[in-house]
Length: 339
Image (cartoon, rainbow, N blue to C red; front, side, top):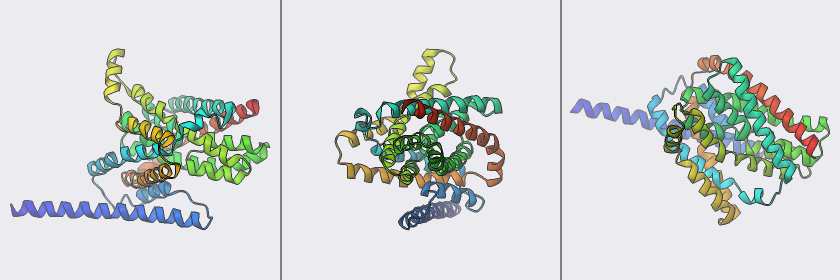
């Protein structure tokens, strides 16, 4: 009995140490992002900092994979539901971004997804990984990848490699859009829609819009938030896409049983924020969801060894890069034709 108690105490101590480590890293990443923003300096974002910290420290903080998965599965649904409070359905209903903006979003999403799936198949990338990569590029980066990963039943290593690529490409897109928009000669309105339809993360899309001046800021924000509504389609699509049952009836019943609980919560949150809650309260709740994404990305990073990441991510990086270029070209051509 004494040995059993001792073993249990040791396990509890280790678990407590890991919890403290993750909380400390989360505080560090959020604090660093806040300080950089406060001083007007460029920031990768707290989530990206968290993913990088997790990968770098994965050899030192050896968290049990099951424990890591349990923590992620506990926090992720709540985080995604809270992010739903950042969506404003009224923005779509009021046609704030215009017909050109809506068509550009649709063209961008289709181009990103189709190109990713085709290139991934040519490179021999697993079809479920390809779907997650397409979701990240087409919809909203990290949040989209994490939203579809449970339905696709991706491992932490698979999810982590996709997130690493998505963050790199998201940063490249964020930095290049303002420069390319100026070189192409886009008006602020077109430039804002282009930023909102191509840049992955909401804060980066807003920052890109701000850098281009004029109406670009409001249009980048509106376009990006409208694009995030694609989560309502892509999560159920992930369930259907990953189904391996032969009969269509079985596919439907299996798909319904696998709908993640956060999806109806996400929909309810977006309805509440759009029609019932004051904007300030909805924004604060959404900000809490963004903060909860940081420890999730840290945990995913801790499940990946840097040497494994380099080997796994090469074909995914190629597919993601080609898809990103195709996405930017498709949306730019759409804007030239429609605006």
